Image 1: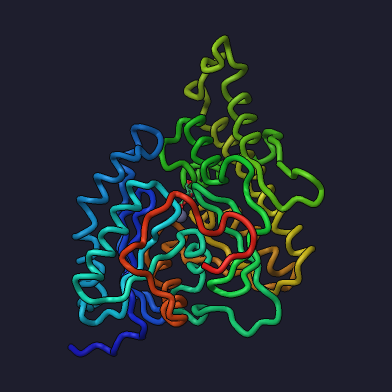
Image 2: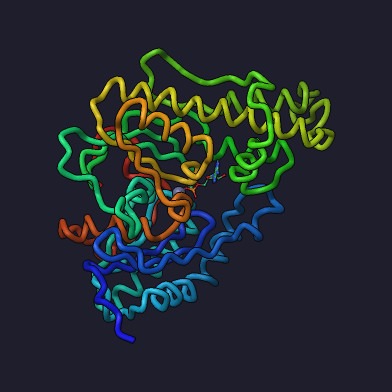
Length: 366
Ligand code: KG4
Ligand code: ZN
C-alpha cells in the first residue's frame, strides 16, 4: 500500500510535563498522523494527586515505546522527520527532564533540528489540530484573538497576536481551575483525576442546590481565584474545622448519591461562571473575532456549552480542541513547533527544562 506523502514540516512531538507520557507526529502544524498518550493515572490515583518521583520514573519506562508507537502509527521513520519538538516548560522538573533529554538525544543522534515548546502556549494551539474543515491556524484577521487556557496548573487569559506572540492579560492569583476540580473530587470522594468525575456527576445534580462563591475580584480584573470556592465546598461538605484545622465535623463519605451530585453541579456552576465572567470582561475590553480555548478543563461539558452560547450571542468564533486534544498531548507540542520551524527558531543542545512558563506576564515572543 502506498501512502500519500506527509505534510511538512513533519515533526515528532514529545510531552512529559506532568503525568502523561506522550508522543505524536504532526505535519504542517495541523495534520495529526499519530497521537499516543500513556497515562499514569493508575499509579497516582491512590495518592489523590501526582507524585513527582513516581511520574519521572514512569516517564523513563514509557518514553521509548511511546515514541516508537507514535512513529509506527504515523507510518514514518526518523528519516522522514524534519524536527523533534519537546515541551520543556512548565511542569514537574523531573518529568520535563525525561522528555527534554530524550528529545535532545534523539535529535542529536539522528541529525534532526530540536525545538523547545512552552506547554501553555501549546494548549492554545490544540484547537487548530485535526483533519476537519475547522483545522488550521486563524490568520488574516484584523484583531488579535483572545485565548483561554484552563488546565490543572494554569488558568490564564491571553491576547494572541500570533502563534508565537502572546500577551498575558489575566491569570489565577491562587489555584488553577483544574486543581479546584481535582480538590472538589477529593472532598466528594470521587478519586483522581477529579475533573471528569465531577463533570459527569454534575449532570445528575441540581446546580442551584448550594450557593457557592463566584470569584470576581476587582470590577476591572481579568484575574481568576479558585481557592475560596474550594474552601467553601469543603466547609459545606465537611462542616467546620476542629482544633488543628485538619479535622472536620464530618467527611464526604456520609453523603448520599443525590447530595454528592448536587454538590458537584453547584461547584461546576460556580467554577464555570467564574471563567465566563472573565471571558466576557475580556471580550468587552478588547475587540476580538475569535476565542481560542485549551487545556484539560476545556473538555468540560458545561464550559463547552456556555462557550457555544457565547459564540452565538457575541457573533464570534470560539475554537475548542477535539476531546483528545484537550488533555495533555504531544500533538499540540508538534503542532506549535511548526510555527517555530517556519520562523527558523531552533534550539541547541543547551535547551533545559524549566518549572516556569515563558508566558507568566506581559507580552512575549515564545
Ligand atoms: O491540561 P491538563 O491535561 O494538564 C495540565 O496541564 O495541568 O489538565 C488537567 C486538568 C485536571 O485538573 C483535570 O481534572 C481537568 O484538567 N479536567 C477537567 C475535565 N477533564 C479534565 N476538569 C473539568 N471537567 C472536565 N471534563
Ligand atoms: Zn496541560
